[in-house]
Image 1 (cartoon, helix red, strand yellow):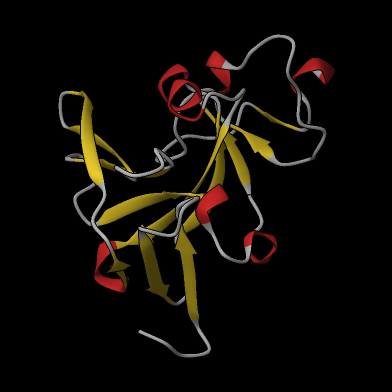
Image 2 (image 1 turned 90 degrees about the vertical axis):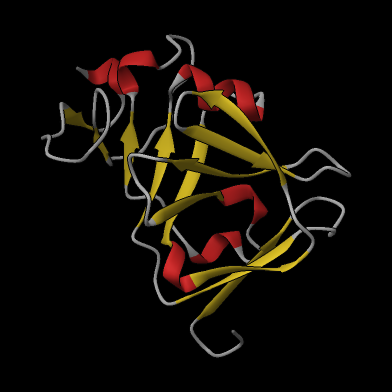
Length: 148
């Protein structure tokens, strides 16, 4: 899968490695409770990739069914979160941005599930904000939540 358009990533210890071809479908900050809990942080940033363009190149993550139809994978050696997969989105895998080898290369373009955003946490950008997911919806605004 190595070429000029290949993006790679790995867990903290390097036991799990992956690669995908081409541009991601999207890159977003997620503020939902489940994602925050998985990464132990005020938000999680994801890179949405088509499974047809993705593959693990080393190791195999373990997964946890966090809710019906949702699997969250992680490295069994170091515990790094790797990805989110949902039965409702069978063609996609959502990779944690923090696992990218070149995280500066893929810039987020939106915030999702801002209805669950922590009141004390804010990202000062002008990206569109969605109360829940982006599919079939319009943003509730742009820029920091506190400005609305």
